[in-house]
Length: 68
Image (tube, rainbow, N blue to C red):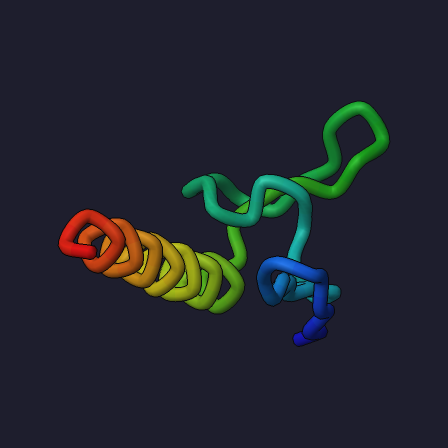
């Protein structure tokens, strides 16, 4: 995972080099129009976990800002 700093917020990103395009879809890994597409359960689970953590954090920030 890479971490970048901007003036306002930290930006996080993750790369899944072993995963095909559309890795979160429940389809077999295959070639379509020259692209490798298909399911990668590990990448899908990790990205879903990261997305939920991000949304939970943003919701907490919004709630705290509303109290101020």
